[in-house]
Length: 179
Image (tube, rainbow, N blue to C red; front, side, top):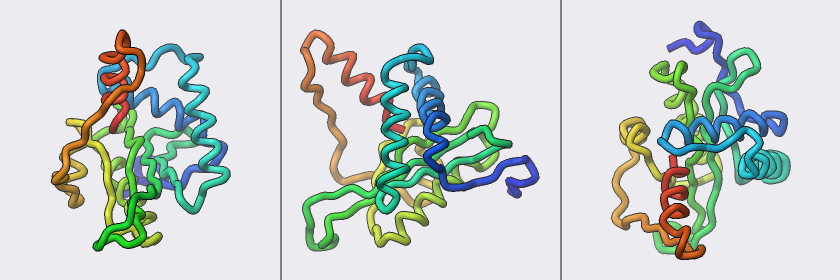
């Protein structure tokens, strides 16, 4: 699909996009069935700072790709390089990670997520990554599988180290935030 025909441009995010990236994060959380809270919620300020820091200071290991419709971001894909213990098939221990895949509801089904994901995977490939990981939502799994993601031989498990009284809420919240 020619994205220009629908008024969308795929581009790499800049520091100026941090507020919109935090907003899209809330859109994603809501789409996964959780309440992202009020617009002035503390986590949103923290998310904006998180994006700002990485976009400003970590451009060699972190990138966001966005679908821009006339200055409004309507979809995103966040990728970064993670460090792990080296092993025989990956002597650097470096791996790619995909997160923050989000498309506003009215823009879904137009190929934006695929274009953004492919841009993110190209960026990781250009940096020598041979393995890329992500946590898939039910909605996103078909897209990820269609570009080659498969089941991991190791299940992802989560443990909350917070107060046992809030542990179930913390575990669910962490699970919901995974794209």
